[in-house]
Length: 513
Image 1 (cartoon, helix red, strand yellow):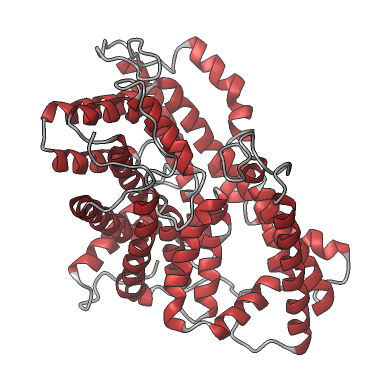
Image 2 (image 1 turned 90 degrees about the vertical axis):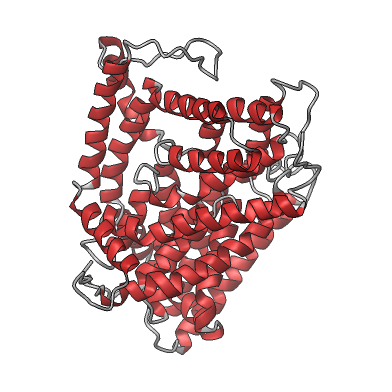
């Protein structure tokens, strides 16, 4: 970005962020960075594989060993699984399928017209909190926020005459930084509860936890994240971006020009199509025997067909209105125009696919080596050995989780490693599994937005490069660091206050064990 570190009006914090950005952008291209991390993982796994660590693997109870990834067996397995690692890497399919539909809606002009209509009825000062709130609500639809809300954040801010990178940052903060906050239950609630309950039953086989044991806390946290994110975006991030000029060709981006008669007709027809599509989907979910429901009859349970079909549904919910808009508004003349919209969307994903190939290989090697498990077990053991007071231990869990999150992105995988250690340990101190899980969720969310190892982080870099070609890892890290640090601090304080006031964490939840 083209900010000037010599500007005397910059505060100390702004100068520090500029330094973070400069250093981050001097790092090798993200693709080379992950190639380097892959080699480092190989070498570390070889060097550490000869050490007896004297700890048990929490997954099996067997002695934990580091697996040498440079051994012949490991390298043959790596090469044999290389194609599958890439083809089955979850973020790739999610992004590409959703982008096919969104690409058509954008190419035909539907998204442009819809945003213009929305901005005409939304006060400028409410754009930021609205965007963060939508990002938080997107958690209900699995990974949809990364491919839908974040790029729209840049478009919305650009169309409103504000810096698009500030919109991307605000949306990213809501989608990922506020990952554990939500006004409505989501798949992550029963997923984490199941792991927590299994871990608690190590000490108390009769204990049963409610899947919504943190719901009141996470729902109230949504308002906290919106207010704090609003302040950070408008008072810290956007002022810093004032000197960052846009240097890409943005001729195809939305403008604030009034909609013409044909555009208004197209928008009405497209919105009607979207409403009818969503309405028919909603009606099809109502019967108790609906094929959208899971084995327990729930629409939102883990593995329910509706949850598994979220991304294809996003594809259709944008594709159909996009096509209708194009024909009614006159921006589409033939089926080839629809295919061109999909093709253009895929062209913009080429760089992302290259990065994802190497990220998939790195994550595979890191997972196979057991380095992440060793890091988690040793960190938890150090925290346990410290013998700190209950409140300080909770803070320690939040901080340790936040640090581990920089290396192990998956919320469920990380909790599956930590919960068998943390949950029984804190039960022995009289702290309930419900509170331990709440502390984990705070630490797991706040640092999502500053680790390049998070699979969707490179995608956010690509979104920024649409407006400023020189954007890199440093750009996004500097944008998101204020959110991460302030979220972590204020959210931790909020949990401690919430606990001190004795407010209910969730359904059938307790603070003490």
